[in-house]
Amino acid sequence: MVLPNSHRAPSERPLTVPGGSLTAMQVDDEHVAFLGQIQRGVISRAQLLSAGMTKRSLQYRIRPGGEWQRILPGVYLMATGDPSWDQLVAAAQLYGGDGSIITGPAALCFHGISCRDTEIVQVLVAPDRQRANYSYVRLLRTRRMPTHYNPSRATRYAPPARSVADAVRGIDRLGDARTIVASAVQQRKCTPDQLSGELAARHNKGDGMLRRVLAEVIDGVRSSPEGDLRDLIRGSGLPAPMFNPDIYLNGVFLARPDAWWPSAAVAVEVDSKQFHLLPEDWQQTMSRHSQMTAAGILVLHISPYQLRTEPGRVLRQIEAALQAGRPAPAVTTRPAA
Image (cartoon, rainbow, N blue to C red):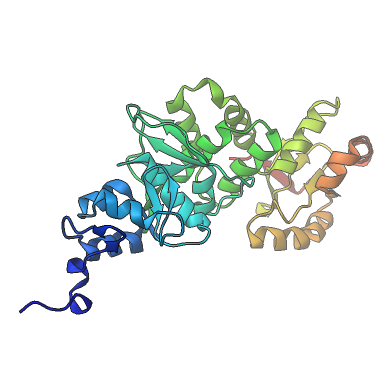
């Protein structure tokens, strides 16, 4: 029995257009719908053709005023309206082709790592991939494709250490690079050792910024303002402090100040909730001042704004504190790990 067109199953229903039908072959509608669901409403030309859709049918769907739209060459949004950020990222991976992986700033957003705003999506692809950068997509050809990735539906994201390294490589502002690396380490998304391993495996001339910031992190600096403090002190002629050491009172952990001069028992704290990214870190900052003061430590609180706008005044405050300070006998110090 032949059913009327209005009662045919979706895979059998012809797509009618001016001039005739486009049903040269049956379309696996269930498979197309499944791909659209797991790929956030984005699908590639290759996937559609493999599912049985004809080129003519595809062109009809993406015609001006049609139900679909092209995002990138060979990649389509199965809806009208503006694509979301997640859809743009999914489209970038499809444009990169089989095995491609999202890295850089888009992956940092996925991992919850602080980064500068960007409209560029970096995609790791095989070195022989014959495809050019297009629109907001930047293809990074690599022979070191990550062996593990973090999935979100059908989108694949590079691990945190790789994402950080790829993001920092394209940055020319030291403060932005410090923020990314410090955020990743503070939030325990990756360790300094993992970043060092990534840096050692890269051998890229463009990784100088990452090398510099990582050296600061390993030396104990954990945020961008702390890096600014380090630069200010090192260029001032003041005695070199210890950065982020562990301070103990009678053998019990007391605090971890941003900068510390044990010979004068002077500590400097850069107070910025933005860069004390773990909530408990910010709460502890408020309570440990009195504990440090009671132990005989002179604590100076400096804001990132003061570091930028009043560096001379900050240095004079530190110098005066060092001259007035004296050792705290019950306090011992352990350098940053």
